[in-house]
Image (cartoon, rainbow, N blue to C red; front, side, top):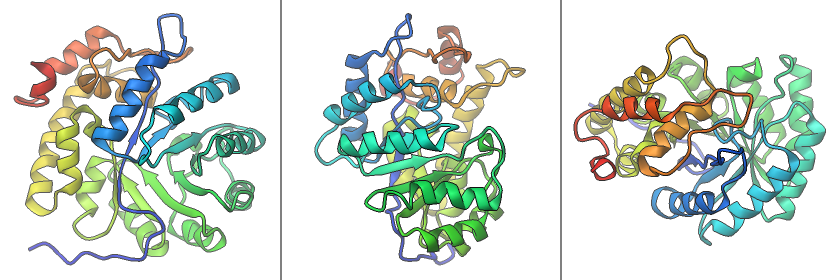
Length: 309
């Protein structure tokens, strides 16, 4: 029997949230026509809640000039009903603020933050970071990406304090399957919407309101939409399918190597968009077409049949 769902008045809906990776040519130039096609189709056919420049979107690697050019293309490519979000990743809080200003001028009001990663922030420094972002731009909404690349994971007590201080801090996203950490945040910061990747989502969704952060889901939009809507035994069964895809993805890559998030996300996205290049901006290592062929060959029977036919 499925336990009762625990809900609270959230500041953001339990949406399906998906990244829009950036395609680069073999000269590391922005492939704007392909990007516009991908952004438009993601927002039209998969989810209106698309975001740009997260860790998978190489927000840490783009120059200011690239940021502005890609931002403009994103804005123009999206349908009118899209709910876009812009990621801001920098070691400099001044750069974060400047990019929020330019994003606001381009018409965006939802932004995704990651803590500066040169050194782990103290409690006081964490409070200062959110004061310089959420506090400085009260007409914008902010999601925080809670990940160890930033050298500190925030807990429920910290999020509870930050949520009380900043009504425009609306959501958190986290990967992994640390259900104790998820429950801590959901309990102590109930106003914040939480977005979990597929296996965390499957573990929490039947008892807590939460959104789905598309990772494996990006490889098959039909199944991703079904996963977001599923509950109980159907969600558990789909989670097993998604685990098989995850195993195929890991097996396709060098087990001794460490990859940036974009390597995985571009391999997954390429199942839906076969022409999408796998390159990451230098100096980071990319996957290649041989890795994609291994990934595709290792998929469970019947997965993404429409794309693979």
